[in-house]
Image (tube, rainbow, N blue to C red; front, side):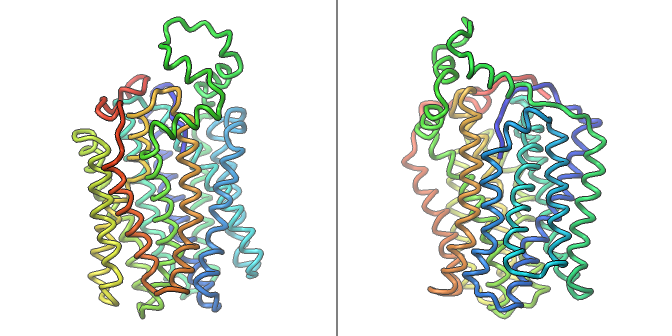
Length: 426
């Protein structure tokens, strides 16, 4: 969820490894917190619909943060924004067991969504803006894999409830505290390219850029609304994966614990099955990225959507056969778990570089919309229609995306994956 811009090369010996470890820890914290709150609210007798609505408040915070995060990032720098997001999430996390009230938890979830979005926006932008087209896909994949590792391990922490309700929250706080200490070792850098972009927008009418092409100049000098509309017109299909990824991620973390418990599965099995989606993504993320480099983003996205959607639709047919569910979730998660990063790469293929910041803001907002819609549609579907409604909606959404792909055409579709980007290789 970030804007792509040019910048200096990443320093792999000092910068990247520390950031990756911090991402693993924050992924673990979020992977534990989401299903943990769902299980606790389910134990308190909250309906699946209200549980999903409760979970969606975190993604309202994600959406709201996107309206404010860019200017503070340009002013204070990457490290400061990441640390600020971690402090926000750390503080809110320790307050959950201290204030076991439904409405206070709603507010805390909103705050966590705001902090999580701020730190991930800054982290992803730092990685991507410091990477060149030749290494950007690899770095995004490594970042995504690191987050997936932590996120997949996180739900196992639900078993800590046996030692007390406060114990999982203590682990979440400890993870963020360790991440904070690691990030404090990094140098603070500011998104110089973004500052340059802002200056270009303020003075585009007087900017003497004779070397720029007419297309690039027109995109750069266009009002923000025009850039957003043009991005949608040229790359609407590449903007959909971020929505679907947010929808899938939030639905699984908010609704699957309810689905599993009502199907008759134990909390232990729920904590084992839920990470299967992330583990599948972890295994297939790099192979899918390499396949998309070779055969194109669109064919890979369509194939992954059709096969992954079919696997999601098959989950209710498995009943309470845990090993079948495990296979289906791992298979589906492996295929669609890279949708966000593949969507960003597809945007870079389709759009001129000057439109990428606007396009990535749209992708981030789509992720937020999907994350808010998922728990609500899944929760109310289980409550009103059937227990398997969350998987019917999830599978149907990916199948529809795959079918839409056959109707999408672009003049830039056959261009080299890095043709729309610039910068030095890492």
